Amino acid sequence: MNGRRTWSIRVRMTVIAGAVTALICGILSTLVVVGVRGSAEDYERNKVASAALRLTYEVDRARVRGGIEAPEGVVLQVLNDRRDVVAGTDGVRAGRPIARFGPAEKGTYSTRVLCPPRGLHRCMWVTAYRVYKPSGDWIVYAATPTIPWYVNAGLLMFLICTSLLVILLVCLRAWGTVDRTLAQVDAIRSELAEITASRSGRRVTVPSNQDEIRWLAEAANATLDRLDSALERQRSFTSDASHDLRSPITAARAQIEEALLFPEDVDWPQTARTVLQSLERLQAIVTDLLQLARLDAADWGESETIDLGALVTIEVARSDRTKQIVPHVQEGVTVRGDRLRLVRLLTNLLDNAERHADERVDITVRREDGSGVLEVLDDGAGVAEQDREIVFQRFSRLEAGKARDAAGTGLGLPIAREIAERHDGTLTIEDSPRGARFVLRIPRPS
Image (cartoon, rainbow, N blue to C red; front, side, top):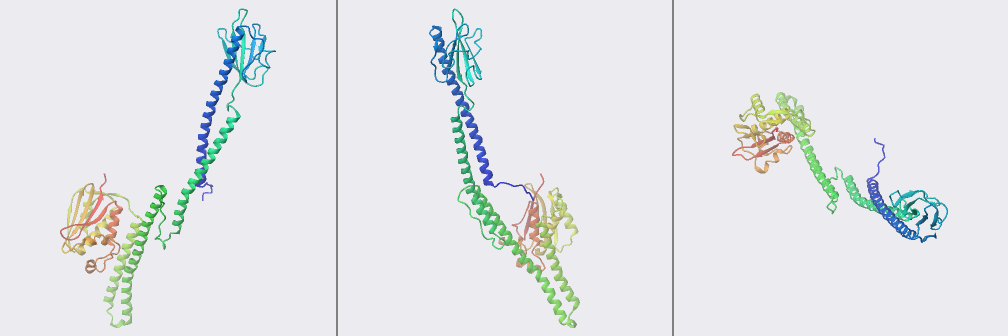
């Protein structure tokens, strides 16, 4: 027994829906953060660049000394040609420069990230601008805080809360949908559990929706239909078999009991022959029942290539028949199958034809549209069209058959058809000018 614990379908589907939603929310949140962070960086850099350019303009005209006004979050500092601080925003208007780098020799500005710049307390983008002066180049430093990966805490919390809310709603929706779907499956399962062999007429309720659950219910009902048919055939078969087995046993018992009542007046050899006939009929019934049981259990021999013409020729030559058997064999008609079963099929057809023929039975073997065809035609009275399927039912015997052979079991033709179907073929009775024409068709190997 597998002891591994498994989750129910409701839990699994809900977890899968939640995981997929979480993945999608994560991807979307990442794209939002990347997009917003890029926009924020561009905004901050443009802001600091604008402030720095205004300051360089003023420095170029020698208008800058002491304190400098700047947009919120922007730090500005001006260094003279001796790299002394001559002006700046609050906190950096005096003292040491916030950075030591400058533009390249032929460049006008240079940007770096410092963590932190001198006199400041966080990582910042610092841009150094060159201002050309006759006495020497001045430097303008402009700094603005770097943007964190999450942009700001408010955006991060908004994305997290929104994602969690969406995941929760999707999980609830998935749970409800799966629950409603499985409720119909549970109803079908409960109805199936209540159906037994003694109460097999019930059917499961078919949902009104055109979906897989409806198809499941329809398939279950179709299966129940087939099971009911099989049960009915089994009951009928059991009843018929019991009756046919009881008849010879009852007859033999009655004759023996009668003989024992008046032993001096009984012709014992005749009684023995009569009882033997009953036993022979009983043996024939049991043999056919065993054959049907093997067919139902798919008890097959090894499949092989069989020449139908040769099989017919051999069987006709070695069997002793009371009627004239005339074969019409086309050479090279081969099929795949179980040789012993096909011999039994042919024997059953010949036995039936011999019982009903007046003088002659014709056997034909030929090819026809990719199939091997075997026909058995007798010159008897034939089978009425309305009775052509009845004769293939187990223990079914027409009145004409009973009159010609009272010892028949009514299982020969059903066995023959079962063998044909197990070879993916068909056995039917077709029209003929006179007599019964049994036609077997088996697909030929490609």
